[in-house]
Image (cartoon, rainbow, N blue to C red):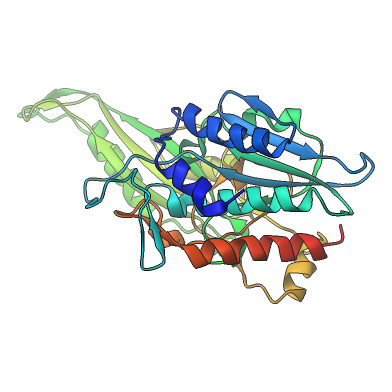
Length: 345
């Protein structure tokens, strides 16, 4: 398999979240051409190279869905053009480079003697943390010893990642005509809560991920100028470090607030590769920089140890005229092969 040619095909194939069927077909075609047995569930495609069921399983996972192109694009987002060593196109950096590098790594290593079993998964709906993405196939996979998540990290290892919980706040109070006194109405209550949230500091600060961060990002109330509304709704975006469960964060904020707080979902938990896991000292021995990532990925959905690492640069993700350097893809594949050829679970 040629990594660049495969990525060019993926770029030329629109693969927005929930619309990834054609991109999944491309991954299947690679496996069919290579003669590799594989499975598909909706738009998730995976293959298992099993050496011995008694050995640990390592998961190589990246996504083939993309966001929609923004209005600042000056190029055709689905035209895979190479200029000055750069491969342009939507999804090239996030996370096409990592995806094809992991796929090439899997296809290469299946022909080598390994002290572990290897799984490759190209998954859907990562950009929306959707239910038909990686979570929909985890129960069909063996127990995973370590997951290597392909994302643009410049070859550094994100061993921790902040979780996310989105909370809907609702303040209620007496409605009425603006010319009259309503007392402590909904907008005033919401305003007090928003100030409390903005000033609140969670006590547990992670040395890797820093503090939790709660931000009120939306507010909505009222239909006309002369009517005080009965409700005032607002939204809180909370980025959670690994020292808290999402449930704990919601409970702490609720204690602060008069408004009723309701979490939309608690499933996007923070993650951290423990120092007692064999992959941690292995990364250190290879001299790879380890850090905590502020951005969310499929790490948040995996109930086993993971590390996020791959070619490309995070800041290019979701940008206009997205690109990845051809050299980065080559270096990414070499990095994955070096890690997996030397790791002893």
